[in-house]
Length: 311
Image (cartoon, rainbow, N blue to C red; front, side, top):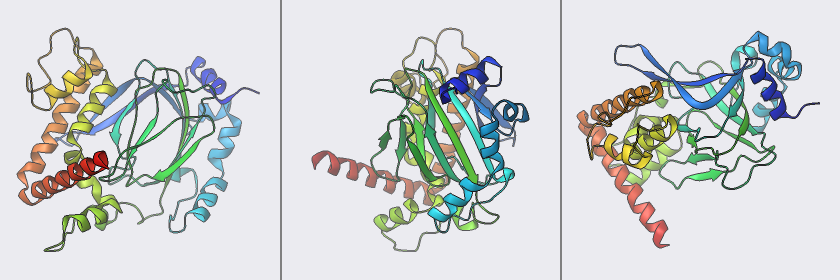
């Protein structure tokens, strides 16, 4: 029988792998759909895919995995049935392919509760890249190598993460499981409630333990978000990732938009992504209570980073 990477290559040969895409909400209410370079995937919701991968089709149709996860994680309240799960096979061709910082469940109407990543890279070695980087709230990032048969499971609503740039082929099998109705993106997950006089350490602990952290994430990690966007989309013509990130953040040319050379479609998408990110930061700044909170959280982050370096 074929190895998992072999199965994915077969799907690619049959034209069943599609470019991975990300979505950004526009002020108009429309959605900007951007194609990530060098990353391709197949979704088992596609009946043509299930016809050529009967074992995966069986996994998709069954609920054994969901029940096992529900038993292992009391309180997860996972939804059974094919409408409650998404299964994707993913191929990264290397050449710098990566994912920017994000939550797998960014907010309503998304119902994802649990993310499961199974890596299928028998010959992965340090230097190949493609590591998963998890960013616990106001804690040091944790980098996880995509070694063969390594399974990573986390809550989709409250784990900020990215995939680092890949310099070799990378294969991954992803399962997202929805929560039952009313268990994801509840009102308390989308509204920040801080008690008068509450200390910043207590606020940080509260936000780190629940999905409400998403409200401040982009502003709290603003430079990291921008850097990861630039790396994901390949930067601008003739400009390295670090320089492009500096310009996008407000130094140099100041807008990340005036680079010389003809832009590829992905670079035009990047320009829009950075513009939307900056617009979000400005919206946070216009809310003084939220802006003040972000400043305090950024100060706490800096203090923790310094203590870790010294310690």
